[in-house]
Image (tube, helix red, strand yellow):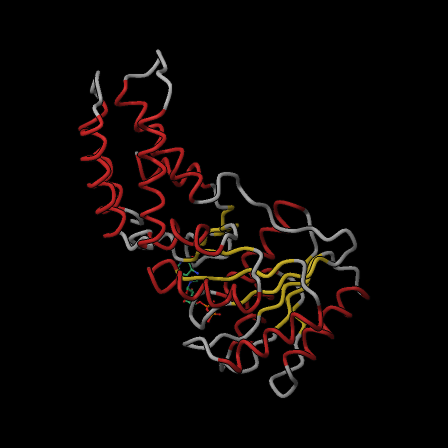
Length: 297
Ligand code: GDP
C-alpha cells in the first residue's frame, strides 16, 4: 500500500508525544528529528523537508494553548495541518473555459499513464459533470498509442479524434479542437507523446502544441512510483510549459509517497487527480487533507 513505511514511522513518532501533558522544546526538537528522517526516507525532496520542519517547529512552539487538546495532541494537529498545506490545502478542480470547448493537454513521460489517464479523465467528466468530451490521439510516436486510445474510446463509447501517425501532432491538436467546436463537445482532451526521458525535441513539440491551441489546462501525468525523479520531471515540464496541475498515477501501488508530498511545493501547481488503479473508473480528485490523514492515521 502507498505510504506504508512513512505512515508507520510517523505514527510511531507521534504516538510518543500524543499523550504528553507537557511538551518541552526538547521534545519537539527530538520529534522533528524523527519526522525529518521519515520524510527523507519516503523520498520527499530535501528542500521541502527542510521548510516543512522549520514551519512545524515554529508553529508548534508558538501556538496558543487550546483547552480541548493536550499539548501532545496540539503538536500533532500542527503536523497534520502543515502536511495538508504542503500538498495543496484545498481540492483543486479541473478548469472550465468560459467558452466551450475546454482544452486539456495531457503531458508526461512515456509509461507515466497518460493515455490511460486521458480516458479516465473523460469518463470522470462525463460521469461526475455530465460533460461530452472528445479525445484526441496526438501521440504519433509510441507504437500502438493511437490504437490504445481508440480501444479505450470504444470501451467508453466516446469519440476519439485521430489522423493516424503520419500527420504532425500540432496539426492533429489543431484539427481536434476544430472538430470539438463543430460537434459541440465541451471538453477536448489531447493525449500527447512522451519519451522515456525529457528531451529538447519533445519539449519543443509540446510548446508548439501549447502555442497553437492555447490549452485551458496542461496536466502533467506523473508516476508516483518514481519518487524523487517524479519531482525532477515535474520541475522540468513546469519550466518549459508552465503546467496548470498534476495527476499522480499508481497511488494504489506501494509508492513511498515522496512525489505526492513534494510536487505541489516544488512546482507550485496543484495535484488535481490521483490514479488509483488500472481500471477506467479508478481516477479520483486529490484531497490534500484526506491524504494527510491517511499518512498520519
Ligand atoms: P503512457 O505511456 O504515459 O500513455 O502510459 P499508459 O497510459 O500506457 O500507462 C502505462 C501503464 O501504467 C499501463 O499498464 C497502465 O495500465 C498503468 N497505469 C496507469 N495509471 C495507473 C494507476 O493509477 N494505477 C496502476 N496500478 N496502473 C496504472
